[in-house]
Structures are given as C-alpha cells and as structure tokens.
Length: 217
Image (tube, rainbow, N blue to C red; front, side, top):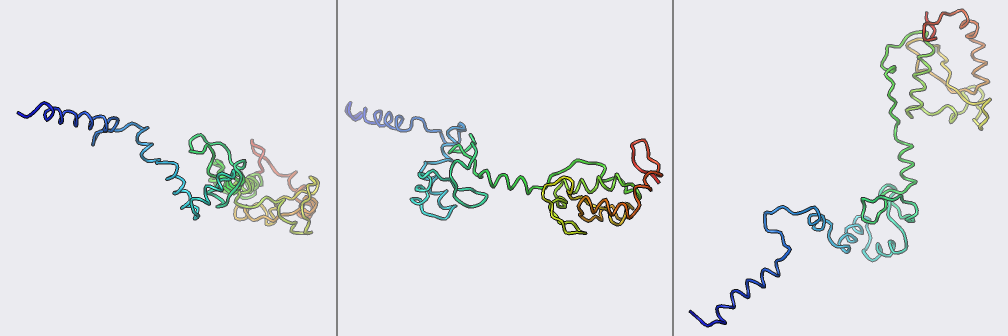
C-alpha cells in the first residue's frame, strides 16, 4: 500500500500541475478574442522587430526614431513627425499609418467617379449642351486637365487668377457627334473672338430649343 507520504505525492503533483496550467485554454477549445489578439500581437519587442525589419533598419535605430517623436509613413516611405499623422484608434500607437500629406496627395490623384448617366446617351450632332457636359464630365473626373492649368492655344496666355481672362475649352471642330470631345484650351477673350469669327451668336438666335433649353436641329 505504501506510506502516507508516498500516497500524498501524486496528489500534490496533480495540484501543482493544475496551478501551473491555470488560465490555459485546453487543446481544441475556442479562445476568446482577447486571447487570440494577445497570441497574434505578441510583445512590444516583437512588434518593434517586425516594424524595423519592414523599414530595413536595426531595432535600436527604429526605437531611437520612435523615441524622438517620429513615425514611418507607409505611403511615402519616409520618417515624419507624429504631428503629421491623424489619430487612428484601431492602431497600436493610436496614429494612422499614412501621413496627412500623402493622404491628401492620394485623394487628389484618385480619379473622381461622376455618376452621370448622360455620358452613355447617344451623341447628338449639333447639341452644344451635351458636348459641353461631356467635357465638364471629363474635367471633373480628372480625365483631362482643367483648362486654367493649360496655356491659351491661340495667344499663349497663362491664367493668373483673373476671372475676365480665365481659360475655357473650345469645340474648334463644332458640335457634331463625331467631334464632341475635340477641344482646345483658350482664354476667354480668344474664345469670344473665335465665336464671333464662326458667327455662332447670330446663328444661335435663329435656332430652336427643346423643352430643356437645348438646341435642336
């Protein structure tokens, strides 16, 4: 049967094993989101090692940058002051991974999607309203540049902010269905001069308009 001490030893070992394993999730059992997050996130040291490896520098150099109040921007691939980043509660350091300048540039370069179903309509010859709307659609969608950013095709004028001489797109081949997208950037004085030479003002007075105010053949 053995002595009392020999019989007590297995019980003591079982109790110690139970204390050491307290809080552990049994194999195959589901873990909570906190335990899963801790298991994936790892220690701060591990996170710093991974971040330093992605940037391509040593852990000590990476920590020195962070301690100096800087943060690596994943968009422009450069270090910036933490003041250049907006807050993001979902990230570990509470800051966004992209600096404000890179975010603004990305937003500016992104093509703006304009929901205008008129673009899919059949092009109508002589419809100046439709032709101008198509050009406006392309400008707003960043598909073609804003006319003010281009020099005047006739006189070479560069827009300086004066509204009286702002630049516009001119349908120099007319408003036929085949040439609705054929335009040239010109300043307003040159645009008026072109219109007078084509005698479009007097011609417009004799043309009929539909119920929407658009010219019809």
